[in-house]
Image (cartoon, rainbow, N blue to C red):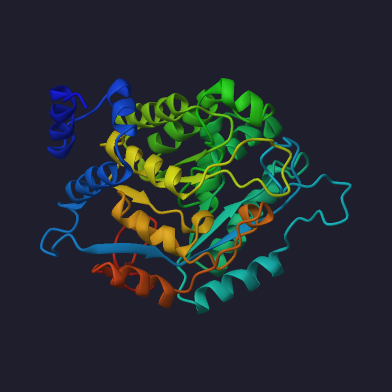
Length: 369
């Protein structure tokens, strides 16, 4: 084996917290998995050092929320999605206020502080329908943050309502919207997007929604769904675009990646397993040096790999997922309780702490410590 001094220099640069470029990321991706994981864990410690000063940097967070899909009717027909229905399908639905109330009441009873609200791109729901739903939820449950509507949904709203993004967002915030999830990111490379979701928002559209939200003071998350038709270079380009956006607007709270789940979908692709998931998450921690938080994806990988991911750059175990309908339709049906999360976190020697959407630690639901 030929000794490579430049690779040693790159390892030291990463260990010290230096920024890497795309070519360096590609070299790091080829490292042995355990070595890449150790570098990512080091960068996790550096990223959280200020946030957990005095706590020994030993906190792992989680959130108690519920993922509610307000409709499964969608007209973009993504090949990787097993959840969507057309208006003619017998099991198509649009949620009622009464059903939403029941779901939120159950969430609060389980210590939940947030509702993750996403749905299909329904061609006929009006702006007033959304405003009425948000207003109803916020008036009845003011303590619950509404983390709602992915960028691709907002692009859909812009087309259906025929209004500027900023105007729609301002009205949604006035009605009760608190933050925006990063769904629909998939891979921010249009060549890939055209193959897996040709009718969905473009990469620039997705980033425009996030830039607009950040400008209005809304915090958002960022995501990546990988392991289908993209290349490693595409994943790195995705990370580069997120890092540049964070540099410009600073509104991303966290990064979450997960693997494509193929069951019941129309997308024919070679899927990837746990090793590739851990490798990609670790690389994301190294590349996204301006993201404080990286969330483990136990929902697609299972609790055990979700736990391992906490040593590969993640500092957050995500949500207990009281309800999840989209990836479960594609074959991922893992579930978790708060007790399960506490056990997984403590088994690694960390302190489990519930958080809110803004990564503030809670002493009890709704109260920041």
